[in-house]
Length: 254
Length: 316
Image 1: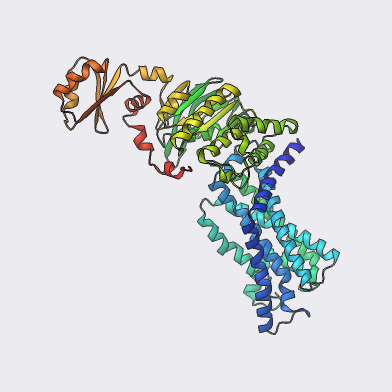
Image 2: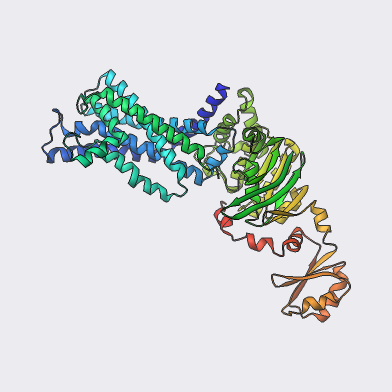
């Protein structure tokens, strides 16, 4: 019984993974953007403003933020790809199979986590090359944060995608979900001395806790207590996962 | 195998399926024939548990479509109007993934996949990406996919929509082979008369969500009685004139043609042409299209072809 369910989750994941491996342009494009930010914004802003946050240069400071950026973009987009699956009827062929919505949901989120992790690994390798002081522990911690974040945000993408019936909805998602999640997360600036309205917004952004955990774990700065940040991230992830699965259950099949 | 009782589906005040009652037997090839928007696809979607009926009920393979959806799903295979395979994957990969979703046992999985690929003539192309398949091949892959788990019932929703005539005939060949080799009850929807005539044991003509006729193709045609004469004429009174002849059983205008039902067209046509000013005239033995016109007062072909779905679904 359990085995049959696992086989079905595997089937959904396998399809996602194969498509991921074959759509090289998608992988290249979505890895290239964070790299561009890391080097261009990282060096550009770093040299323009007299940046100072815990004795690291700006590029190093934003490195964990860029990892988070890559996860935010990849995961939310990935989840909202459900709109395409529906447009091209692939979803219908899955919905008509004896597979529960929950199983499809888990398979899809695993696919999103795989994609996000693969991209984050490329970025971690680049980080090692530009001198981020990784330790075995901090990498392991980072992987845990990456998986949590991408699970939560893929769920969010799936949830929002399940309410949308046209591809135009995709553009809305970029403007109103993806960019705010990224800009408000503290990926690009320290959160200490923000105007109060902005500070308040950053505290409701789930990605803030991902960025903060990553930065604390990798660089030892920017977080009062990475464990608390991590705890809040876990709570957010659980909430987003619940939102995702509930939305996915009520989604119309045709 | 399928028992439908007073099935109704309403969308925002629009009634797509209006109290459908129908029984389909084991190993029958049943055709739902109707124009676009007649309620064919909505009916199929309800039977396949993708849509909940507004009221009424149906059982498929003895399972209730509302109360036991997963039992129903295990019992059916379905080919949708538009191909739904992932074109980034190969034909084999698509089938492999679906065999997992349908819990086809591991020890026979590969054998069964090869078997259905063979059945639809795609075995040699199994390791090519679906992207490279023609429209007809994609549709056949969907049939193979629907058969993987040896379903009791197979739904084919407009299996040849948007295919060119040659691919359509190939498709028919495979559907007939399927009937012979897989022993499965088939419900197919179509708006192609020939297709229904050629493939189906029985046909339900569906119009505005209701079954308006239900019989074998031969009986449906015979119900018109005799031959059909079609006369193109501008004479508004032609119908009146024609009805004066004893041998004219029925006369009505459809799409600018005066359509007459007569016993023997060869003998009655000359007499008619003497009194009706005709631009052209032709006669034929009844086709299902004539049956459809008689039942609905409309011509199925002109409504269906060039429609949005038709253009949308052209893959070849």
